[in-house]
Amino acid sequence: MLIEVTDQEYQALKLLGIGKLTNSVWVDKHQAARIIGKSTETLKKLRESGKLLAGIHYQNMGRTSIRYNAYLLQDWVANQHDPNAHLRAIENWQKSLPSNLKNRNLPK
Image (tube, rainbow, N blue to C red; front, side):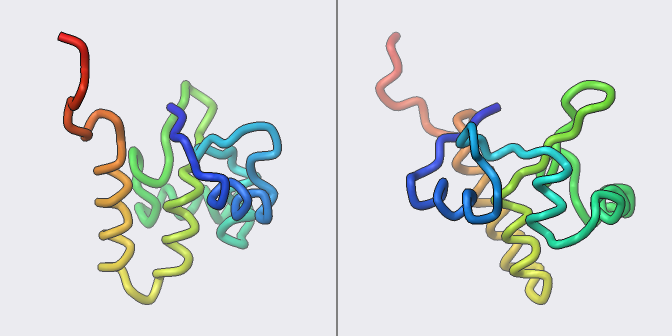
């Protein structure tokens, strides 16, 4: 799944070393670890402990591949002191998904 990003969002991700070849919101474990400033092992522990949520913060892409939502990881780090703010970010992200947009101007 790809989500379009603005040029400004793309530039912010580039500063984190993300999006060199793509503007995808989904990143691998190495890029995700950089975003949160922790190791890939800590990232795995956060997943296993339930602090990062499947389908929200990460997606299983097959048996061995996991991709992380770069935007929500950034927000998670920034709002660790305010879980309600992070929940709002999750809600806003979910509302922005194509499956949750109103079917305006679709051919009949």
